Image (cartoon, rainbow over all chains, first blue to last red):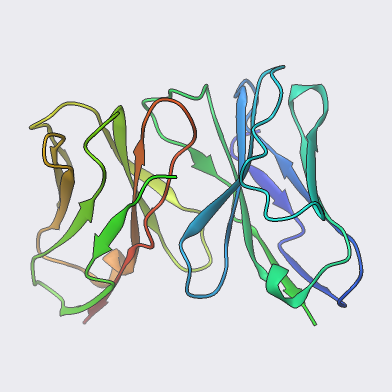
Length: 115
Length: 111
């Protein structure tokens, strides 16, 4: 597609429920990143996919968080047993490769609210 | 995880004012420095990717400079307009991982 697409744009869920966030990157972009911004905080790195390599999961805050990228394209971020501190804007970005000189292209994000 | 500092945290200027922000980052293992503009309810948008010490880039009324030896970059906006209101993020890249973002400078330009 022309840009990075994320869905849903907004999600309100009850504490303890599981949620899935979807990211459809730009076609041909081999690198895909998940970040989140909690209230009053900067953009926090979560996970990074590069081609067929093993993902860099070093930013995932707990084992309740997982992500996969199927066929090198669409990615799904799953949060199990959501907690109120998971409330944030979750942003997905893609780039041609990790060392891009053109910057990341971001989606418009999913605003997750855990009540 | 790189230590990235941006200042000021927020800024309120009048239309027509010129302004600048600072991004400080570790000077070791430097590969590139990214600047992004993030308007409310929109996606962060890449402004500049800078790699060379002393580099200066310009896009319309916005320009940026880079000092890799001392680890800082300045972003300048000349003649601010209300549509410049956004959060400006910098992110250094060490070449080994992903971008590490600062908390940003929130700019509000009043008409």
